[in-house]
Amino acid sequence: MRYYSIHEFSKLINRTPQTLRNWDKSGKLKPHHTGSNGYRYYSHDQLKEVLGIKETSQKVVGYCRVSSNKQKDDLQRQVENMKKYLESLNVEYEIIQDIGSGINYKKKGLRQLIKMINNKEVDKIVVFYKDSLLRFGFELVEYMANLNGCEIEVLDSTEKTDEQELVGDLIQIVTVFSCRLQGKRANKTRKLVDELIEENEELLNDKVNKSNAETK
Image 1 (cartoon, rainbow, N blue to C red):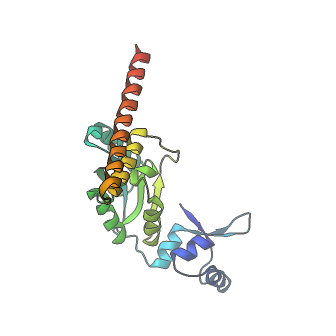
Image 2 (cartoon, rainbow, N blue to C red):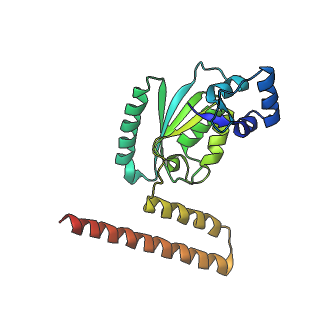
Image 3 (cartoon, helix red, strand yellow):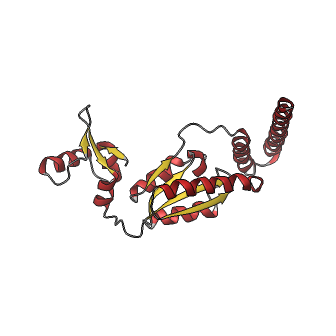
């Protein structure tokens, strides 16, 4: 169960912290508990109650993503592991799969997930890593989810350092901006992108060769 501080909770329900303090005194809405520091904390169930979100028809959604078609085997492993975890929760669930960059906001699965959040069809979203959902913008989706009574559970909170995907995402960002440039600036930028791609491929090849050498 997730809990929110009085400031987090007040923003999510579009009220002020003082309003919540007044509700506490009048008995209209008591905090779920008070911490040892004296701060008030509110539960996710209370958030759904205040926002008028019904439990019926809501489900848990597991979201699995890889960056390219070459990683379909990895995607299948993610799906299988996600199934095992969600089945252990004994809840109604659905798994959404995506293939695409972590900075691509137009992925079919991601759009389906956002639509479900907006329709208040999702009680909880489960991802393996924050980057599985989005490379940039996770907090924005999380905020939108919270507004609709949905929480996001990240199974592994450690930072995922997938250099190949990260470099690919950064190259895509530079490419998008370079397409908006004209003349000499555009040519210089595109040349830089080509160099980054070449250096990235060389780096990956060196790692593969080193790994192969170590296993011999």
